[in-house]
Image 1 (cartoon, rainbow, N blue to C red):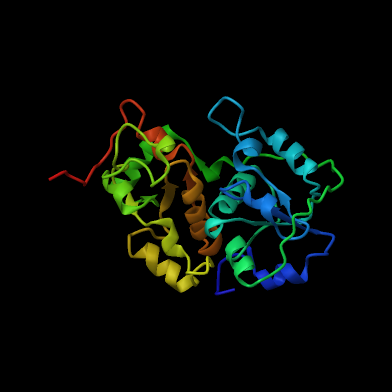
Image 2: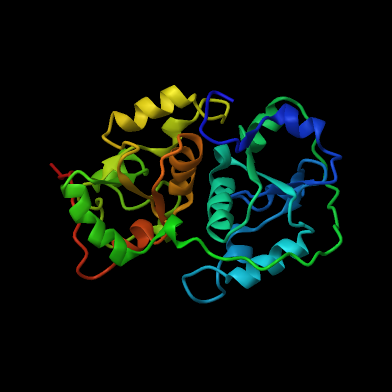
Amino acid sequence: MNDYAKDVLVSTEWVAQHLNDENVRLIEVDEDILLYDMGHIPGAVKLDWQRDLWHDVERDFITADQVSELLGRLGLREGDTAVLYGDKSNWWAAYAYWFLTYSGVQGLKLMNGGRQKWAAEGRELTEDVPHPAPTDYPALSRDESLRAYRDEVRAHLEAVRDGQGALVDVRSPDEFSGKVTHMPNYPQEGVLRGGHIPGARNVPWAKATNEDGTFKSADELRALYEGEGVTADKDVIAYCRIAERSSHSWFVLRELLGYPKVRNYDGSWTEWGNAVGMPIEKSYREE
């Protein structure tokens, strides 16, 4: 599919043809968690990105053992092909893909175009909720090479200055410049300071997608990032506000383009912009 580095995308047509395959499991991950209840692809189970993936009180994820328990509750078995999809061009589905990959899960795919493309094509949606038999999903081991922590990002600034590393800020230009501290309608995720991490290049996440939510071709994506100096020979860290948009860009860089070293900074701007002593750059100046 468009000469991507890895076989990690399936089309809506492929999903429609494999709805009844015993070893194919569909998982819907939406920002708007009510969408699933209003209709979903037949057989798909629901994953709530906040309730299911986040620790109850700490700002961190559930443990690897708890991920195994979660997948067991969803009826997944080792060796299954798990196809993730969701709303808004798959940004939260990409977040789940990144987190599950970080947690050691194999056999993951994204449905190219997500929920919006499936619905636009007039394909079947149902309100029937499946109740798969629980499984004993095997133990998992985390791959820490896929995740960046705050102190690692700060240490990475030297590599960025030396041209050995890259930082990709995938937020909107206004967030990057410091004009605003959050996306429209997301004030609860704002921070005390606006701006970006020093040396970061601004490549908004949605530039990687077409109008129908599908990913652009490998050549188009490569030109997009290489044009900003984000090349495959560099150690790359992506971030946004809480890592959902940067997961989408991580997926593009690592899975579709095959960059060998790409990490997602899940603390992102809501951590960096509120942390004491962290350097920032701000290009917006009020008149």
